[in-house]
Image 1: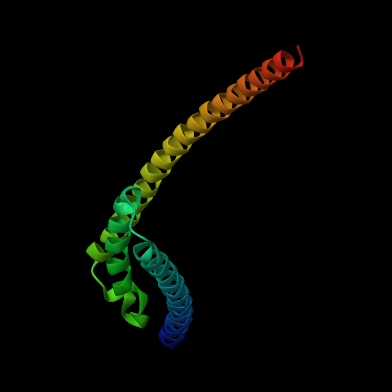
Image 2: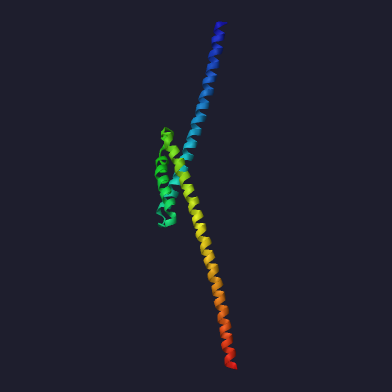
Length: 152
């Protein structure tokens, strides 16, 4: 009977080992998928930031370009890490999050500035259109008065 108990315990342990190995395989597969997704996202962000940095320098874009350059440098470190991605220090991932948050804030601020400029330009265009309409009206009135005085 003691042998039967030992055999049952061994069988239980073998089943537990098998379950744990399956769980380990599942977790490793999940980590590989997550690693691939992180590297792909890092690559997209790195290339987007590289393109932003290459934009023609404009005063309103300076903040975006500076934040993009910071994010580009940080994400370059995550882009080609392969299986060692999770061996990187947590601080690198935190810096990447902070860099993207800074970039997002810079883009939002710049968008507001551009919207303000557009509003100003639209108001100026409306004023110029009104002035042009008044000028045309004055010109028609003047030309009409001139042609009426010639015919008299």
